[in-house]
Length: 228
Ligand SMILES: Nc1ncnc2c1ncn2[C@@H]1O[C@H](COP(=O)(O)OP(=O)(O)O)[C@@H](O)[C@H]1O
Ligand SMILES: Cc1cn([C@H]2C[C@H](O)[C@@H](COP(=O)(O)OP(=O)(O)O)O2)c(=O)[nH]c1=O
Image 1 (cartoon, rainbow, N blue to C red):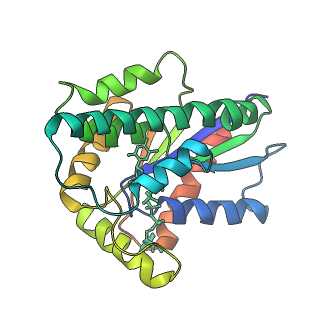
Image 2: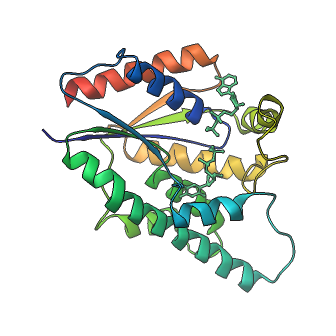
């Protein structure tokens, strides 16, 4: 039995992690049972070496200052760190699970690279999203379905800022990419990706209440599981 790969994508604060936690809870309670299938919930950046390095780097706002050339070099470094994290994620986690017939659900995956680094590298390449997609093509595993949590960036940033209030142990202040004008570029990139592959993407209106977003997520999952 071949495995099934489902990815959750969207800008920071769109509610992906909340929906994934809801789905994981339902799966653990047997409410998402599919004949003979086990679930694996995972995420990028991972909690491996590269992922930890990335999380450290992304904590806090974008650094100001430095010349344009140094900034471009830093953005390329970030792209390759995310790529390395993805390669390890595939080799150590995603591919073995798929080979074992599991349903793998990942909170972010290759489309995050296309959308985010497609935005950070807009002054390095003429078609940065395509360059990033091209880098994945020969070796990465394409998801069976990608659920895109679509939301207005202003509301997403508001949610990011209120995260800390709900969880006192959460880091204070916005992370590097949690700025409305940057997230607008990323949201546009996600929209373009969904338009390019309409059969792979399911777009969910993530501005609605958590229960509604979760119900629609489960519906999209049930559909792909029934096909698989
Ligand atoms: N549908 C929703 N309505 C209102 N608040 C939400 C919703 N989904 C998530 N949140 C809240 O918004 C914040 C960001 O959600 P999170 O799931 O961490 O987003 P992401 O993983 O996409 O960055 C959290 O504090 C979460 O509780
Ligand atoms: C996986 C990935 C994440 N990112 C960014 C998106 C987030 O701003 C940040 C950390 O991801 P994540 O921890 O998923 O953030 P959030 O829960 O707020 O959505 O890394 C990239 O820029 N490129 C990538 O390839």
